[in-house]
Image (cartoon, rainbow, N blue to C red; front, top):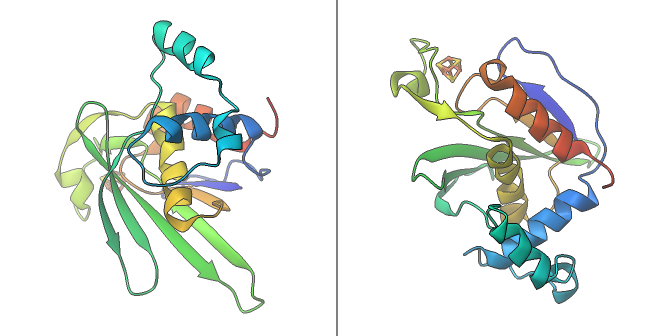
Length: 184
Ligand code: SF4
């Protein structure tokens, strides 16, 4: 998976496929979310109920932000609005592209902040003001939501949604590492 940043920011790294850990988290999250996607029993068993209970008792949240709205464009691009735990909405976009050699890419364009403090004059997000930085899991789950909708893995991630990623670098880098980690 390749990650790229907003505007003049540079690509961070070439990456490998999402990790088994990410998949395990996804399975755990999906098993408890309102998502209609069916998870095979074998994947759900990756995270035993007792361990999930332990996580919840230790203060970890188990679950995913639900999709609040979906808009599908004629070219197959899908824009999702995810509703966060504090009821704020963020945008994430899935862009499927097939090149002339038949290679299929799926790019996730993710948000890094709720709103944006930079207020560029041409930008609707900037005009809406700034609420808060996203946490790393809120960035990762945008990629997982795109994978749910398209039912395949995302191949590229660009941080060109809401917000300026360099202003939320710690969470952006954590999300980047999670998405690119190959093994636990
Ligand atoms: S998201 Fe922020 S940095 Fe990006 S164009 Fe809009 S206001 Fe500018």
